[in-house]
Image (cartoon, rainbow, N blue to C red):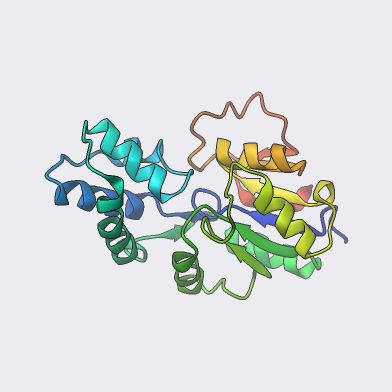
Length: 216
């Protein structure tokens, strides 16, 4: 059975991988380095999605710190790398869904705002490194999500019209990127969907389980 989208582009954190606890720990270690109080994981969840610098910026703003971010980021990146494989897990149905789409000759790609150097080790940890024909991190191109530029770049790379491809994500950042690119979007409910009303959104599908993608 053929699939309606020849190219499916996935977000990573919050869509394929639950990495919130590890990101929160890296951020909290960074806050402690600057004698600032740790924050709950639930709070960190509301800051994930716009890239690491924006994540750290929001945390330090919330702590009332005016320290220069350029001085903070190297330490954060060390913690981020150290915590990367601490306790990440794949969301339910991810492995099955990727395999089923590959069986239907669908090209799979990743478009994440995670630094590209940290994407490969994470995919390798789960044995998923061979599933994706292209992986873009938050620093792979001059622009990142919510710009639609990365999605347009991926579609052009595979010579697929943007409107014929599908973006799968969990956050308002993913949604805005898809809208900006003119790419249909499917959203998951289980991720980190801050600022996004999933009951009133123009999406191809809003899913509780990634396997629902296979029924499109």
